Image (cartoon, rainbow, N blue to C red; front, side, top):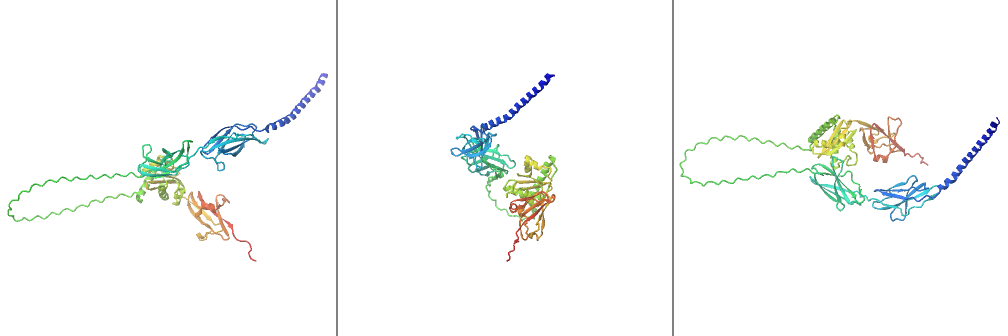
Amino acid sequence: MKKNVIEGPNKTRLLNGLLAVLLAITLIAPAVFQSTTPAASKRTPARPVITKVTATKNSATVTWKKSKYATSYRIYYKQAGAKKWTTLATISSKNLKYTHKSSRKHPLKGGKKYAYTVRAYNKYGKKWSSYDKKGKTVTIPAVPSIVKTRVKANSYKQTTVTWTKSINATNYLVYYRSADTTKWTRIANVSSKTLKYVHKSSRKYPVEAGRTYYYMVRGYNKTYKTYGSYNKAGMQVVIPERPVATPTATPTVAPTATPKPTQKPKPTATPKPTATPKPTATPKPTQKPKPTATPTPDPDSPSEINKKIKEVVKLTNQVRVKHGSAAVVEDAALDAGAAVRAKEIYTKFSHDRPDGRNADSAYNEAGAGNILGENITTGNTPERAVYLWENSRGHLYAMIDKEATHIGVGVYKNFWVQIFAKNPSQKYTLTVYANGGTFPSKGGVEKFEISVPARADVKLSTIDIPEKEGSSFIGWTQLDERIPGYESGLMDLDYIKNNDLHMPENTTLKANWSDTSDSSDSSN
């Protein structure tokens, strides 16, 4: 019993002692760490070692090794030979690479050599490392400048391409493509000493009579293996038709004259008997008139153009049915727009109009809406045009679009246009509301409506401007009847001059005003 009484207190004292020691260690440890860690973190960082600098035509990338005690890095650059370094950026120490992209503030010029250096910084000690004063250099590749290209057809099987000089070019690469493809084919690589190339038709690079082609030239620097920019649309040329040879007439050889026999001496005249009366001459039959030659039809006459249009519609529907799409119906408004576009692509072969507007505007102006897709090409016949469209993936996709319900076709001098739409006669209403003002041009009404082809664009500058006494018109806001109280941001006068209003639904424009009345009392 005594033994148990004595041992209990001893164990308690031992445990209490251990706890006291542990507590002391716990209290001392933070002080130790707090006194040693800051001291280490305030040291001067080591000089960064740049491992490499690489360059592209408009950028340079610097890579370096990790610097001990660094919390950030600062990157500098200068053109080789210059004395002063220029700061590019300060970045976190987590990064060991920086890409310098050419800019107006920090430019990089092709063919020039630049030096780069890096300096480390310790924010705790506010200390900078030393740096490589020479830096590591790299040459920015020289990029040829863009050239202006011209092309003309010499004959039905030959063209001549000319271009302007390109800075930094050691060679020029000449490309061409036919109007029914977007893929460029390189046909020549010539020295920078020449600015002209004659393209003669060959089996590998053919030129077909009556077809349209595009040419482009871009500069190339073989030292740096860099390519210059180029005109992506290319320069258009129409190859003339092959002349039809007229056969030379074979001269008729006149027969040799047969010699006349020697004349026999005349016998002594015998007395003439009484003359027998001559029988009455039988009248000759009346000559039959020769048939009048059938005139050759004018290929550009309205009747011939209409025949061509009908044939394209027929052939197109055959393609659609073959691919599981319903036949489309010819639409007069689409035809009218396509006729305009055919003449436009004769001068500028593009889906953009000569004035820069989208092709859809031509069909909208003709009264058609819900435009889906336009196909253009060149060809001597309707069969040729449809064949080219069918054998081009992008054009075929437009031809067999299942949403299409109507078609329009235009042709001008072997330039063909095909347009598809869904319910082109659909219209939306644009309501123009003067909001307390009036429209003098409309007889003083406060509100008027415009019928617009569905999904067409309306030029805001063509909409009448209202007037309001004591107020100045400052612009339009757009209302949406589906959302009560909705009103768009202000379309001010500058916006109105340069922008269109898209019409995917019925729309209301509301006038906004600025009070210009003088509320002050000017009397004495």
